[in-house]
Image (cartoon, rainbow, N blue to C red; front, side):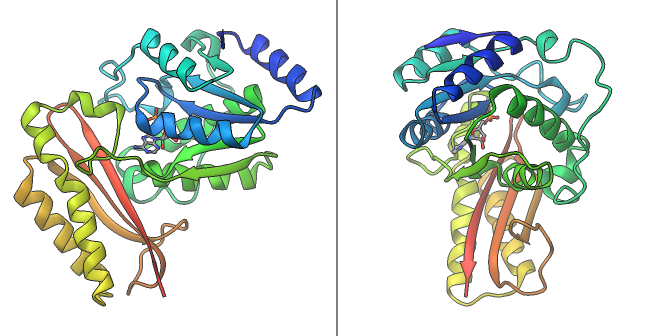
Length: 282
Ligand code: AMP
C-alpha cells in the first residue's frame, strides 16, 4: 500500500496502472474509518483490480457554524485499517495541495438540494460536488463507491456523473449499522454516553414507518408524524428534519408510490446524525 500526498504523483500512478489495463475502484472519505467505509472498500476490492481510498476533510463543504474543527481525525489508525482491507493507494492530500489558490470555478448543484441537508446546509453540496469533481480528475476511477447513508449526496453524485460526463460507474452501497441499528458514522464518537444509548431510536423510527407503509399507509404526513413521535419520545436530540420524497429526484409526494426515501437528521449535543430508509412501493 502506498500513501500519496500530491496530486501529480497520484495522477501519474493511476495513468500508469490504467495503461497496464488495471481497473480502479475508488472510495472517497473524510477518514476516521469505520465498518461502513470498510464495506465500501471490500466491495471495491471485489469489483476492481486496484483500490484507491482518499482521506480528505474538505473544508469547503462545511458551513461556518459546523464541525470542521472537531471532525475526528486519526491517520495512523486509518492507515492500519486500510492496509488490512488491501487498499493499494491512500490519497491523503493537505488542504493546500487541494486548494492552493482561491478557486476560479466551482460546481453549483441546481437540483436535488432544495430539501433535506441541502436546505439546512447552504453550499454544502456545492462543496461536495466541487471536491468530488477534483478527486475524480485526480483518481480517474473506473468505479466510485458511495454509501446510501448519505442518500442525498449519492443522488447529487449521480447527477454530477451524468451531467459532466464522467466515464465512471457509480456504485451505491447499503448503510452499515451497529448491532443496535445505529448507522455507523465517524461522528458517533462525538455523542455523549446517554445520547449514544438513545440514538438507535432513529433507525427504530424509520423501521416503524416502514411497517406502517407495509400495512397500507399512503399518506406522507402520517409517516413524518410517526417518525417524529418516536424520536421525540425516545431521544433528547433536536430534530432538524423528517421528510419523505421520491428517490433519487427528491420531489414531494401527495401519496406514497414508487421508490421513496424517508430521511431524518437529528442534532445531539456535539453530533448531528442523519439516517434514511428507502422503500419500493408497488
Ligand atoms: P464520510 O467519510 O463520512 O464522508 O463517508 C465516506 C463514504 O462512506 C460516503 O460515501 C458515505 O456515504 C459512506 N458511509 C459513511 N457511513 C456509512 C455507513 N454507515 N454505511 C455505508 N456507507 C457509509
